[in-house]
Image 1 (cartoon, rainbow, N blue to C red):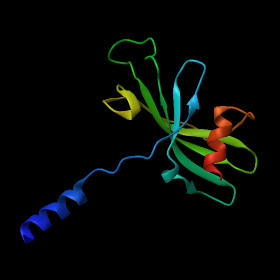
Image 2 (cartoon, one colour):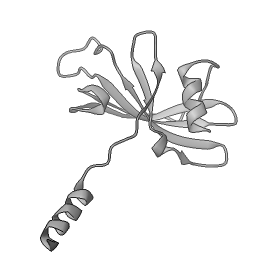
Image 3 (cartoon, rainbow, N blue to C red):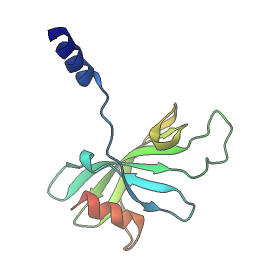
Image 4 (tube, rainbow, N blue to C red):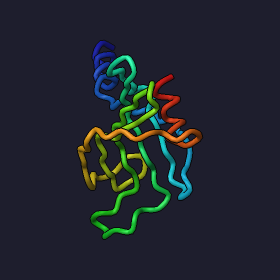
Length: 129
């Protein structure tokens, strides 16, 4: 019995943790945008960072070894000034960040204003709640 409990305990400890992706909506191309509220981290009084993802309805028109169906990234939000900056992005061959990584980019912290009523505005509302 002790061996069984020990085995179950080790199994639970080794189980991968999965992101809690929440759909924010779809864009005009049918691509779905997600945010993982469990990853929201406060950087300062008015800034937070969070993991975001785009799940493409159709792969971009690239060669087979470059095609990707999803992109996960880290996005910073300036809550007071309603701005955001994507600082990291990685593309994956499968849906929802699965499959092999096709690219990885570290990006400069360049903020853009968020337009009211857009998916960016919805992400801001979740990240800065």
